[in-house]
Each structure stands twice: as C-alpha cells, then as structure tokens.
Length: 93
Image (cartoon, rainbow, N blue to C red; front, top):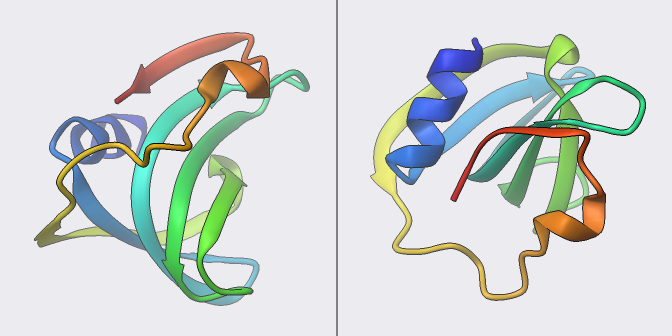
C-alpha cells in the first residue's frame, strides 16, 4: 500500500479509504513514520469522520484504499509536516 499512497501523493490524487469502520476521502499530503514508529498518512479530509480538516491515519488500520480520477491543485497552505516531528518522511508534497 505504501507505493500506492506515494503515487497518490505525487499525483495529487484524491484518495478514499475506510478507517475504523468509517469511509473517508481527502487530499493526501505525506506518508511518514511518526514518533511512535507507526507508518502514518497525513490527509486533508474532505468527507467522512468528523468532516473537513487535517487528520493523520495509521496505515495499518486503513482498508479499501483507492484513488480516483479527481485531483487537487496544490498543497494546502496551512500544512506543516515539520510540526508533526516525523522520524522519517517516506514521501510528501
């Protein structure tokens, strides 16, 4: 799944997936190893869950990951990956 996520990030493709039983979609911005050692996807969530906003998801808990034809133009202006203090960045915008 790591390769598919990085391809979506680089292609600025909208992604959809199920996380904790809830279908979500959004703009993927980064895949990284967090401070606890978990592979984490950072997304501007556009639908699902508690609505729009920045969300981080542990990749091990994602199911039904898919990309669609829709894309987004550019990174969100308020995105700050360094604030998350990633151990290692796998791929990012």
